[in-house]
Image 1 (cartoon, rainbow, N blue to C red):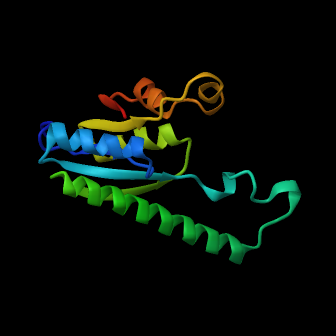
Image 2 (cartoon, rainbow, N blue to C red; image 1 turned 45 degrees about the vertical axis):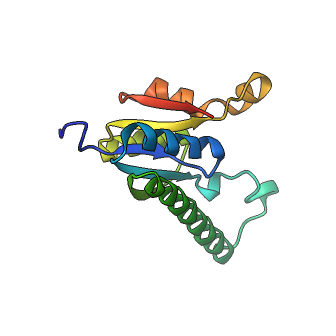
Length: 152
């Protein structure tokens, strides 16, 4: 295993300001450094509205939706990478399709042998936290890597 100075930092990015704050914090604390900007895209088959009420989705429609989702994920990742580069980081992008999101982040960090996982905290509380859960909390709980949770 390479030393931590050569292993990349994985930054989970969804386009939100919370995720942008994570990029900015990593740039402030660790630049220059190699980073991977990760966007997690849920598998469309698992999105509730698709095939709702037993109505099948045509294959061609599904292909178009999948292509659009991939394109959107890549554009989001590239925006994050541009922000990282502006902060002095050496950024590459990665797209992971699957879920749950926290699990995809942990798996991607393992695959990249990341020195650290960084992500923003949306600061959900009360009912929203119970219903939506905490991606950052789940990543911290399940990863064997250090996790930097950035509050904006």
